[in-house]
Length: 407
Image (cartoon, rainbow, N blue to C red; front, top):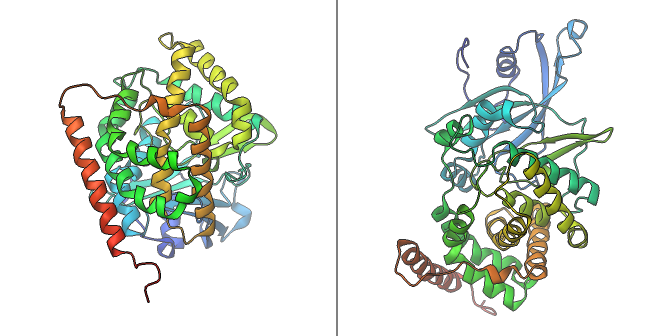
């Protein structure tokens, strides 16, 4: 940061020291000398890529500490897992979050935790962010899911975000942000999906009907086509990981709503993606069935009030159904890539996959399978190569797996 020597970026929580944190917080001014810190891992089991740590602070002179001096902060670091770090680098996930706070924070019409200190290394993609601790707010369990009231609050909040940047991705500040971090990468999403599909089906295939398994496999080589069709409609800034465990609510103030984890901001340009993602990741199936029409109507109404006159409700509902089909991508990628040795992560993966399958069947979203034209195009060639690659990869996994009954 300007005006101070650049600090090293800690590689893990054990590298956090009193001296480092004192220097990081000194950029704010008025922070008394820190005597001790206690570090707690608060990210385990959340499904996030990276480390989230809470640091409780004690000061040498508690008498001099003002009410504004933090009793604790949350520190985000890059993952120590090589596979997770590779995915984060491919998708510029840490860079997205860092630049989102730096460039877009003041323009985002929903609560964000205050950034107290941050740094990002462009060569290694390691990062650190010292954030306001929101532990005083209410955070809900994604496995249990949101009730109707919380769900509608989240939908209204994301509608305000999308309305703020509706069809203005080519204008500052969001254009500067996208220039720094890059926009959607459909080909990469397709490759990651195909790589995650075999382990996902091996872990959770028994949760899916035969029809849904066939759909998941057929969809793999067509992810690029699906994202191309989504990109043909109105575009806006999306959060990308808009789920319950990335949200904090103030129980005393119904409209006090804060969203964290902006590591996939701008990866998808179609705003309804965030709506569909929230509904299948964070709302119990029975609640979704009861409120989803009302939720999409509320979302559409807010967008229209904010100037999105180019979106009819019929078009919004059609986009919602198309995005519900696309929820195969985050569900399969989570089910195939995350560390399932953590029981809570496994339950999160199971829950999202079951909710996604139910929504696809409820809304007959499979009828919106990406269309082909009659010409040989680079996209069609990539789909064919992806299909062949996937079959070869699946065969290799089967050959490597021990036969049943083998000693």
